[in-house]
Amino acid sequence: MNRVFNFSAGPAVLPEEVLKTAADEMLDYKGSGMSVMEMSHRGKVYDAVIKEAEQDLRDLIGIPDNYSVLFLQGGGHTQFAMVPLNLMKNGKAAYIITGQWAKKACKEASKYGEAIAVASSADRNFAYIPDCSDLPIPEDADYVYICENNTIYGTVYKELPNTKGKILVSDMSSCFLSRPIDVTKYGLIFAGAQKNVGPAGVTIVIIRNDLIRDDLPESVPTMLQYKTHADAGSLYNTPPCYNIYMCGLVFKWLKKLGGLEAMQAKNEAKAAKFYEYLDSSKLFKGTVDVKDRSLMNVPFVTGDKDLDAEFVKKAEAAGLVSLKGHRTVGGMRASIYNAMPEAGVDALIAFMKQFEEEHTA
Image (cartoon, one colour):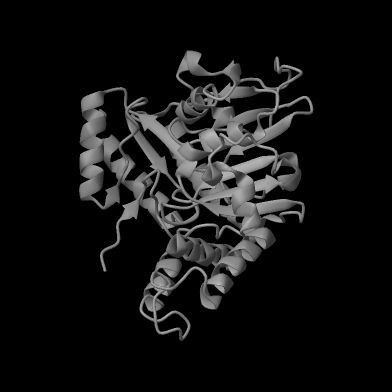
């Protein structure tokens, strides 16, 4: 087996232990005589799979009983519409623009009401998190929206915004389950699974029950109402069955490791090691303000586009793949999610040191 170190921002690396379990159970899941891919989502066997996955997630995070967990489809882009369609009562919401995904979410919300950008870091290509201690949030705003970890730009909120009593909605796609979460600080959390939790195709929503409305306008499509899925236990229609099963295996893997506190310690150690080298390098430079650096996504550059391209090409040949940065930032980006082993970070640092020696006097 020749496994590479996959630094992709998503779909991303999965724990080898999880992949091996899935392989072992591929043809016969727990004596059922079939794969999870084949079984009915209405059957008893799959009903246990999805319920166990939800319970393990609740245990991991400590999700209170007054919050529902939904396993949905459509990715973050669908949530950009579902959030305003379901949460806008006054037709107004505040958005903090810290990158492309928050910007897209704000634009989508403007189709359904007034989406107001109350802060932005666009002036420096989203290299920092703006001061969110005293934002001009309208008194009649229905919620405040953030993208908590910015996959493309490598920033993360170290402190949550002062929402002035308004509901906080967070896109946690690229930091979900990387550290403990106090769910009670949020009205709604959503996360695409393909970065830190499982394969692409399932989106996890954690929503406070009082925000699940039954008085939505008739014009809101049935499939875009949180109530539809909450009432049906995420089984209103055929869900992404196998993807949810895979997420469930990751939840068990995280519990076995010691939970989110243990995972945070591992992530902090990996990131500290990488940032320490990056800060000492004469060739490579980080693109994010130190105080706002993500533990998950680390963009960096040499300052020379041709040299960046050469680095990415040679790194891939060395088994370090998907290091090309997003087109809006350029350079490189190492996504070091939960499942990236420390050995992967060590291998990347060693390669960068060698590359630096070859390209500096």
